[in-house]
Each structure stands twice: as structure tokens, then as C-alpha cells.
Length: 290
Image (cartoon, rainbow, N blue to C red; front, top):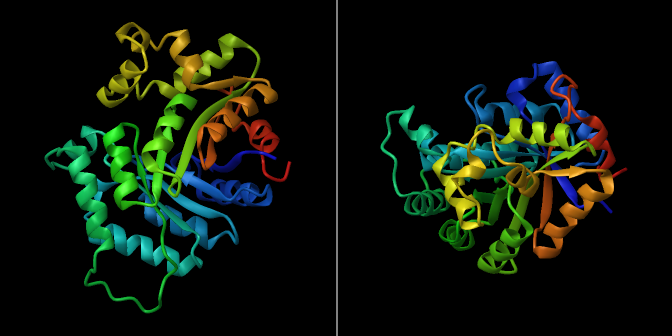
């Protein structure tokens, strides 16, 4: 049985017809959820509504919605509305992102742990929102890598989302979260046995993260040095955080996270050829109905 439950989709890179076709294909393959990053294109909650309105069973997750972009009441309102309209098919992933998310809005950057705890707490406290109908509860997952943020996820949320981490990190995250919280591990994967192609795909995927201080601190805590995240990333860095190889090798990497305590794997599928289009071969190979 495949350990994969959801697929990360860069919705901003697709036209609306392409996005609907993509979501419906994932749905037909038996995937439980489609996860979308909050980037600098379409508004993430509006996009989620569009996908939910054009599908029947697949759930849609914000992964992650930047909390600097909306106040807690606005986020609670968005989650409740999407849950009501879709019959409970919305998953709310939240996170502080990085200082650029606040700077571009002219908002001062705050202590991430303090900010996130206060934000999610405010979302779950009584608000002046009026609802026409009782919406199904919306699960809230916090993007969390460090022990303090994982502690916040354990305290105020339904669980945590991690990205580009090792099974050892997953084991530590499970210990901090406890047995009853969800731990969703987003894992970049590339189906190829060509090391050069796999590492090139991995470097394309991690390039936006290499200059970010939060990721550098995380990598340093796991034994890497500045030399590893300079000049496009070392082979060791790429091989550690990008699962590549044949199908059995990739499934082995996924199952290592499950055995370490992950609730489920969310696939970030990478194509070994930058001109190769979307890697449906991998998505279909690890689908729940394969």
C-alpha cells in the first residue's frame, strides 16, 4: 500500500482548465488531498474554493497560507466558509513563512513562535463571525521544523506539516507532537536513477530555500555547513532531502518517514527533465489506487 496521501501542486503555474484537469486526475487516482503553496500569484483561499467547486471527493489544503497576509479572524472565516461550501473537504495549513512575507506587506516581523501561538489561539477562540450553517471542523496544521514551533503545533493545532526533512527529524517531531497529533511530511521525490538528472532536479527545487536563514539553521543543526548550501547545494545536501532513484528506492524513503512517526506523506513530484512537463509517471506509480 502506498504511504502517499496527498500531492503538492503549484497551482499558480497552471491555467484554470489545466488546474481542474489536474485535480480531477488526482481524484481519479484515489489521492485524498491536493496541497497548494501560498506564493505570489493567485489568492490561495479563492483558488482552493475553485478547485473544491470543480471536484467531488478530493480535499484541498493550504500549504501553507502565510499568517502575515491575513488576520486571525480572516483566516478563520476563510476556513469555515470553505469547509461549509465543500462539505468538510478543506484543510488549513498555516505558517509564518519567512521575513519577506511580512516585509513585502510593510508589517514588522515578530518572533515566529510567539506570533504563531497567538494567531492560532485567536482563530480558535470565540469570534464575532456569523455562520448560516454549521461548518464541519477545519483541521489546522502548522508548518513547523524546529522544536519550539513543533511544540506550538502540539499545543494549539491539530498537527504539523514538515518539508524536506530526514526520517530522524520525523522521529524527533513525533516525540514532540505526541501520539495524537497529525504529522504530514512533504517529501520532494524524483523518479530517475540518473544521479546527475536527479540532483539537477533537486537543485531546481531547493534553489529558493538555499538563501533562507531558517533553512540554513535547520541544515546546520543536522550537520551541514555553509559549503553545503552555497553554489547551488552540495550533492550530500540534495541526496539527503530529495528522494530519488527507482520506485522501490523512493517508496523505501517514504516508508522510513512512516516508520519514524509520520501520519502520511505528501508528494512533491519533480521531473528529471526541466522540459519534461508534469511527472505523472511518479504520481501514478505511488497513487493509492495504483
